[in-house]
Length: 125
Image 1 (tube, rainbow, N blue to C red):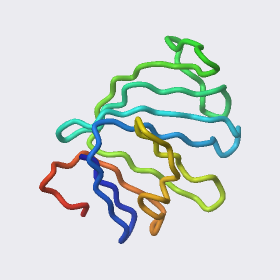
Image 2 (tube, rainbow, N blue to C red; image 1 turned 180 degrees about the horizontal axis):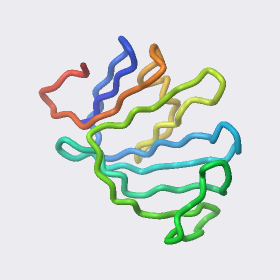
Image 3 (tube, helix red, strand yellow; image 1 turned 60 degrees about the vertical axis):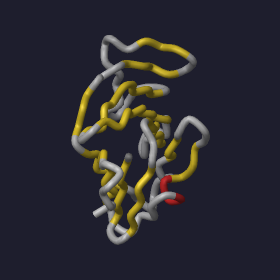
Image 4 (cartoon, helix red, strand yellow; image 1 turned 135 degrees about the horizontal axis):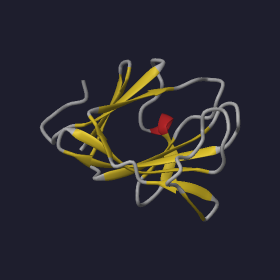
């Protein structure tokens, strides 16, 4: 389960994995990160970026495939904090079936949106 909260807007999704995608505010280049939801953690399985510049340099171990530099950080974290701005396009939230604007799941009622792994008995809080 994945919990999301932005101010008073909250959602709980029954998913095991997801991808976040966004456009870099300066370079206008797409960045994508794929996560697996585990008990108590979000595991970053793959990061992808379409170019480099302004703090977006892919690591040396990355591989160019299908127009993206790709690497596998395999990093577990208790939560993600996403800063959302009216001056940039919103994050795209993708599951195996489809992609949609994050606004369609949890509107940005606060500057930061929090995502974390939660169990089926939890409410987004």
